[in-house]
Length: 102
Image (tube, rainbow, N blue to C red):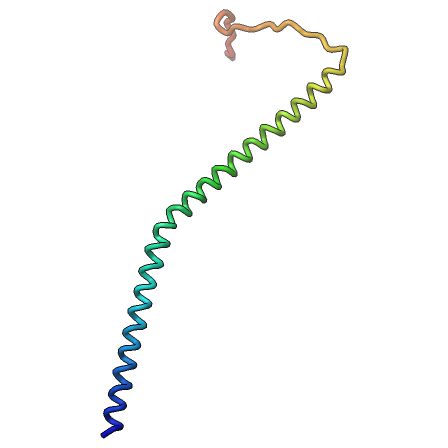
């Protein structure tokens, strides 16, 4: 009779332990989801800001390269004494009747 009573207690202990473990796992999952759910939007915002900063960085690098090339051209022109300023003649399309008829 002791064996039957002891096996019933161990079975109940196993059931209680299993239910307690499942309860703890469910609680932990809900806790993680609630914390990570609020952090997900923050992570997306940070990633968006990071991609925007990368784009702005590339634009600034392109501007720097453009200014450097302009500087090199201007420095090259500054040493050339044969340069003369020319008068520009503007063509007004309203006064000229230019047509491309065949």
